[in-house]
Length: 425
Ligand SMILES: *Cc1c(COP(=O)(O)O)cnc(C)c1O
Image 1 (cartoon, rainbow, N blue to C red):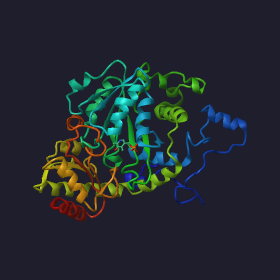
Image 2: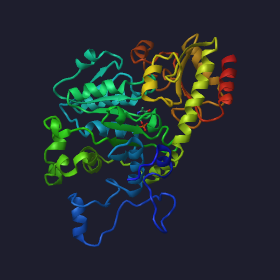
Image 3: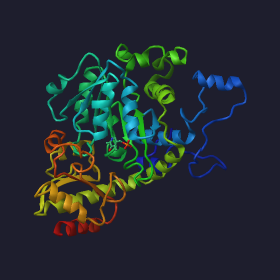
């Protein structure tokens, strides 16, 4: 495996064409793959040999793009999924089934909150939500004998809480479970959770990795560092025979790749949320410029945040890259080169003023999306969290006046001019 820097990996990682091969990573737009003898194919079904047979399990294009993300994160293996939601679900379900329990930061993406708080409870998986800034003693109280994993976001969407990854890794490991980090907002360009003790990383590739709002997708990356056998009783799915593969034991057969192999050959086979090769191809085009876009997002967001701070109309600004922000110091530790392009702010006058301001924006578009090359904006209280009362919003950490502003890679002066004219209208 070539040890390229992040920038080179973004552009050329994983796909190494030989003589006469296409220069561009090709889309293998085929659901199925041909073999010469019946026995050849049989060995694939028994996992005795590696190879492609059906795109629901694996596809060459998807595998190359997964491998590029794997190298960016510094893992041992990765799997693409059809969405970020599927990645979150599979990351948990791979090691936690009915009767199990997980611990999750309260500051996570709304979709993740619903998945853990409503849907996975119906499957018999309980979740305790904890304040990410609580003391270690406080967080430890959430662990139960049936706890299987701890989950958090490196930078939370939309609360912009930066997680103290080392603190959470230490606590998770003390209780014999892995730490799973959703690294969507920071991306491996700005933060590499494995270097701080995280065991599994998930992504919504729909956001910065794609970067152009073209293709929904997700990814799970395995660090290979968690010792499942040391906690074999907690993780029987990985450490005892799988009857659906003639009794294979993942940790025995696949060693450090046990977790990601099981996710691919068992969960993807049975539940099927594969990313399409076409979407993986588009994602790869996005990845080729991720290292150029992230610094620009951060640079522009910092300029916008500083501008907002100077304005009378603005009640508060939250951006972890801004000196004086509550999460500035922790961001400096885990992502010293930059955080993300998303910032939040509120206007004096509250909710109604915030809504009127958004209606006056011209360059920044109102869309249900974030982390795009184009500047976009959303008012969670009126959109994603619309069903909640003001009281419920505050409990969920979403102030009624909160504007989520996703700064793009346009010229910062134009973005600021747009905000200025909307504030003055
Ligand atoms: C969007 C998002 C998700 C869900 O991803 P989809 O691709 O929309 O399914 C998960 N986590 C974070 C942090 C997100 O921003």
